[in-house]
Image 1: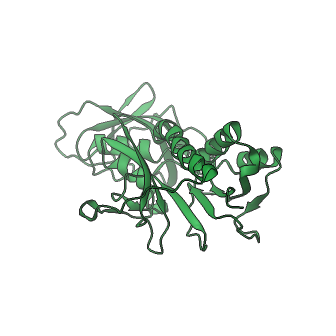
Image 2: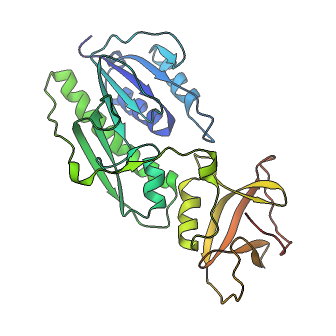
Image 3: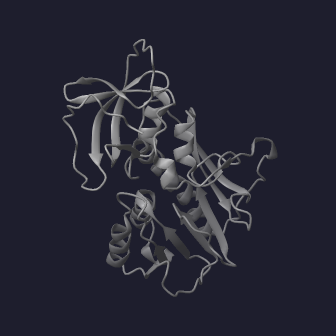
Length: 293
């Protein structure tokens, strides 16, 4: 099965790449698809990947199922777990390596106000994200921008890389690789539920980027008020005023039913906010004595 591949796929990106492969290559090139549900996102595309595989009679497995890997090459897209295999595993990583090795690189790039984002295809090694680079793509971005807008812009580049590599696999052409540049290495830490919480002591531009970076398909920026968890889905930077006793997180004004919140520097107008427990909007807002924490 030297010309076949195994696909580890998750998320919108995995589904898109599977669709494109099936539109340009014979489905027989795919030996099997492996996927997993993800309760850390609002929409995980698991069912879409499973149903598309079934429609083309491609064997589909959940990551917790028993299965064997028979192909020389495996591709992993949006995969969240380490894969133990003796095959040639190609990982598509959400950064221009060697920067942002590790976890949640795209989220952290956006929070950090990077002017560009990218994708790197590497061969997997025991130490994560250290393998030789096979292909890279980079995309310039401007702010404000949501993470899903970036994902949609990046995803065609995922397939662009996969297509180049598949053409080589099908035709038996050797990959050209290069070592990662040791000068620019940086790491991106995994994020947990605590990392969704807004730090109102940051400036309003930072908080706006944070809200946009952890929004759909993720669950949204988290805050607490009146003993409730709330998810702030959309917000806009608002002109600052002089505040003699600046207390980040307090509502200072209400405009057309939308609270305006004091930040460490600047103000933020919240335009979409839901209660975590119910998923329902808590707008229009009418209680100025509110403190988001």
